Image 1: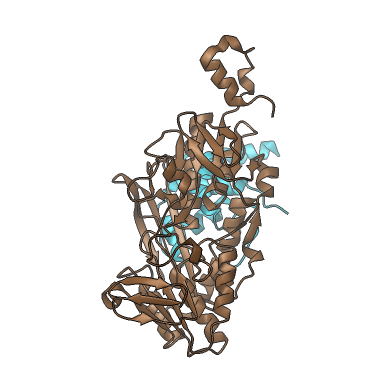
Image 2 (image 1 turned 30 degrees about the horizontal axis):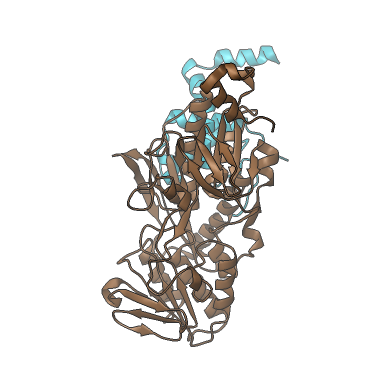
Length: 422
Length: 102
């Protein structure tokens, strides 16, 4: 890179006479994508592909390897290795000409249309796609903060935390107590809290520790696929899982990481072998700091394009966005990324655009070859992304259907990885 | 060869021809939804069958079977329900045009 494109443009706008006019044909519009997860990786690829380099696409992501939150519960359950859910960005660069920038994006200078990187350098953009995911609200569970995530892991960002949770789970003795503090809505999912409960029970049962108990303390009165999970837990792991909503536990008062205690309005759980705290969440810091979030901590978007309601040059996709009826899943982020990419290409290249449509399916493993799913399709409507039609697995389905659904789950994993990274 | 193809074309009614020839660009856009599970390379894993390179007629028949809920699978029934005939023709044209990678 010699002269920066924005310097050209800025110079051209501020005082064209100062610069020998560069050939306008050589100035490519630039799209910066922040965050290399299911939203960002997909967006970068779909913006860049088949453009023959007409767009300069930069993907900013500090990690060189990405461990997926989806199927991280399967790692916990012993169904997958961590390596099998960890992927690199090499092909995005080599196949689509996407330029990888492996550092943290520290902020957005919206007035200058620049992303400020951790080292202080700046990347100008014509369009910015933000896919920063969620940050944890370390102040949402009394007594628990970032300094306690070793003692009471969250494992809500896949990687070392997930490994820690697995080590701790594997060490739970027979008769031991596991407490999960479940998150309030809205929360990133996967990793699904209730699939995680199933995997915890599976690991304990498989190790013959059927006297161990998992208590789920939930701030919500109900949760997704509740009937399927509860029926599954009773049948597959009898007496091992106790789910308590706020009507029963009367509120989670706080935790003490030194003594592994969790106190509710109803009971105090002492000396737990493992406490998994999944706190409340909000949009990644960069999106909040840029003023793109509202009071909810998430970012309002135009449901037809995923464009930020606060800035016409910025798109917010994935967990950080307020995506109406869509859950904060990888599948959703992947789907939203394609709509955003289409809109960006339409704006910058005049490419054809079509009405936005979104889909999602979430699979949850209950036990070996026993998987349930929920999903839906969505369109813009009533000013939000609205569910048009949904489906969910049925209680009492045959073992064959559940096994087939798990095979679908595994096929989907490879499919979305290919879609994101190759 | 060319003469033969031309001959066949002459025999195809105009309406059927128009329907068989879907809008590939529309199909490519709509296909983004399919390739989250069905790999564009043609690789098949688990219970997700390959759909690239499939002939348009078979593709259309399959999608219609899901759309009418004659074929089981909640995901496919849900996804196919929204597509119009024109959109299914577009998808068929697109996937027929994609060559599976060896």
